[in-house]
Image (tube, rainbow, N blue to C red):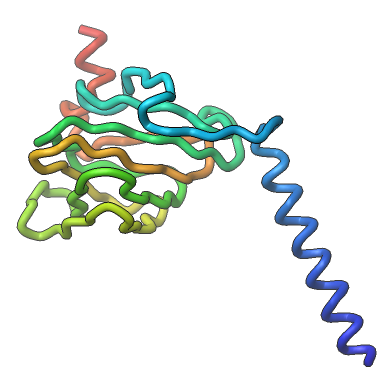
Length: 161
């Protein structure tokens, strides 16, 4: 009986901790999102053409955030790393994902709508789209960032010139 009570207490404590983390993600009211009703913004840390919208949290601050990224057709993002683990889910279209410092679509995999992948922090990868617009959901921990393997691929540096 004591073991059952202890298990129940641990279970409730775990639920409370999980709820606390979600509460700290800045959600105030119940809100629904659709790709056609959110306000998309140009995404300056990605090559020209990408757009984003932050749904929950703040990528510039410590903590979990959720964002959508929209990529045009035939869109490549060169090899890069992120400081924290991220989870990507394809919401619309298809997304190619490859690992390594050399962009090679033949060595990657193509993820269709509904597919996800987890990318550990510090792992070099690259992504691309096919002949259709693609929207993905990004769940990660901030402060989020991107470091391109080849610094000349960084669009932030190109915009400074």
